[in-house]
Each structure stands twice: as structure tokens, then as C-alpha cells.
Image 1 (tube, protein in one colour):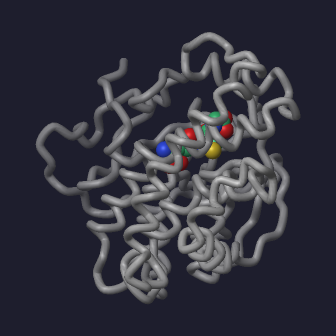
Image 2: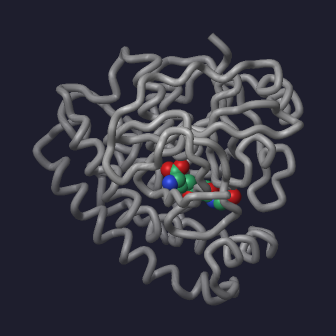
Amino acid sequence: MPEIILHQYDSSPFAYKARLYMGFKKLAWRAVDIPMVMPKPLLMPITGGYRKTPVMQIGADIYFDTSLIAAELERRHPSPSFYPAGGEAMAQIFTAWADQNLFLPAANFSLSLVAEKLPAAFFEDRAKMMNRPVTPVEKMKAAMPLFKMQMCLQLDRLSNLLSDGRSFLLGDKPGLADIAVEHPLWMAAKNSGKRSAAAFDPYPLVRAWIDRVDAIGQGARTPMSGEEALAVAKAATPEAPRASEEIEGAPKLGSRVSVQTEDRAPEPVVGEVVFVARNEVAIRRSAPEVGDVVIHVPRAGFVFRPAA
Ligand SMILES: N[C@@H](CCC(=O)N[C@@H](CS)C(=O)NCC(=O)O)C(=O)O
């Protein structure tokens, strides 16, 4: 089987989430370090326009979004399962809560602690990506107590859940729910450290759980250059698509579609639909740098439109 390649950068919490997947499944993988901001010239031929972090590549098959990356790893490497005691639906509910309620306060809090150390290009890039004005560093720093309070409202909930003595969110064994909820807090816990801003001090149960999740580790990582990843895609043939499911409202097999994230409007990715399932649509596209590739996209969180 071709190697698992993660296009990622180390400070990204969503990339950290995918690295924990590798640790959980005890996998060897290759890390291609990509820039934190646009342009990402060696990633664009792989994704066809999608810029978010991380992206998983296996040969000429490309996977967007940590939700689909988890599903694909579970399919290819079922043991140990991300869903101890069958908690797949619970893991998805925890993931949605973490992404929608926890990620932004925790990310804002983390950034407010180190804003003066980040390059102006970072804030300019994110403002452009989110289609809003650039946040001045002083404003970001002044808002730290507000971000902290917003994050702590969610930490209260986690602390309540852990107060019955359980080691992990769904019981005695770790699973995807833990990884999905911990990744926004990893950066916050790291950045707050022992400063007076240490937001986690009132939450010893959460702090200890964060350490247990971090102990899952990040698998066996070796670096790969972006150029090598392009060559891997070019030399490989995408896997033959599995049998599709009939799903009302999903894009039609064989049609051309453009794909964009629901929340923002980066360049759409255009290709021909080759696979449709409950949680995934796959499209084939080609580019001179990579030849034919199949892009796997989760249905949730993405918009599919007919394309010429
Ligand atoms: N829903 C996506 C979210 C990924 C995401 O927002 N990642 C951040 C980095 S933590 C990002 O893409 N930032 C912009 C960039 O890296 O260019 C996922 O689960 O993979």
C-alpha cells in the first residue's frame, strides 16, 4: 500500500488532530510541511485549490478534512478502532461540538497569548480567507480575557463530564471523541503554560485528560518534500472507486461539479464525480504536476455545484 502522506504544519491544531490519528492507529507516515499562509504552490496541484490544513494523500488519492481523514483511516486500519464501545455517533456529536463551540474561543485565546510573535502576514492571510478586516495585534491581546472566558464556559462542561472519574470522554478507552475535543485545547494549553493566563488551573480534571490524550502520540513520522509528494501522486494510479450509494440530493455519478467549503470561499475544486456515499463524494481531476488524482471530500461542510 502506498505511504500515508500528511500535508501539514506543526502549529496547526487540525494537523495535530490528524497526527494524533496516526498515533492512535500506530501508523508510520510522511510529513510534508506546507506554509501556514497562502501561497502554497506545491499543495495547489495536489488539491486543485483547497488550501486548508491538513490534507491526506495516499498515492493518487487525496482526502480533505479531518472528519473524512478519520473515516478513511478507520476503513483502511480498523484496529484499534476510533470508536470503542461503538461510539461512532457520539464521536461525531463531540466533533461537531468541538468544531463549532470550542475551536474558535480556544484558538482565539491561544493566538491572543502569542499574537505579538506572529508575522503580520498571518493575520492578513486569515482576514482574507475569512473575508473580514485584519484584526490589529493590540485588539487581539486586549480581547484575551473575553476569549479565555468563552473557552472556560466550555471547559466547565468537560470538567463536569470527567467528574465521575472516567479517563476518557466515552469511558475507559480513548477514541476519536477525545482527539476531536482535545485538539483545540492542545494549543491553548501549550501557549498558556505557567503564565498568569493559565486558563486550565481551575480545571485539573481537564488538564489531566489533555495529558492522557497527548500521550496517544503521533505515530512514526518521517519528512517528505513537497516535490516528492507531487512525484508520488504522478507515479500512482487512483484506487478504483468502490460501489456508490443512491443518495437523494447528492451529486450524480459522472457529472462535473465544483466543490467549496461551506464556511468560506476559496478557489473551488472542479472534477468529475466518481464515487458517492453517505459521508463522501469523490471527484477525479488532473493536472500536469500530478496526472490523474481522485479527491475525496466529506459531504458535510462542503457545497457541491454543477460545473461546466
Ligand atoms: N474542517 C477542517 C478545518 C481545517 C482548518 O481550518 N485548518 C486550519 C489550520 S488549524 C486552516 O486550514 N487554516 C488555514 C491554512 O492552514 O491555510 C478539518 O477538519 O480539516
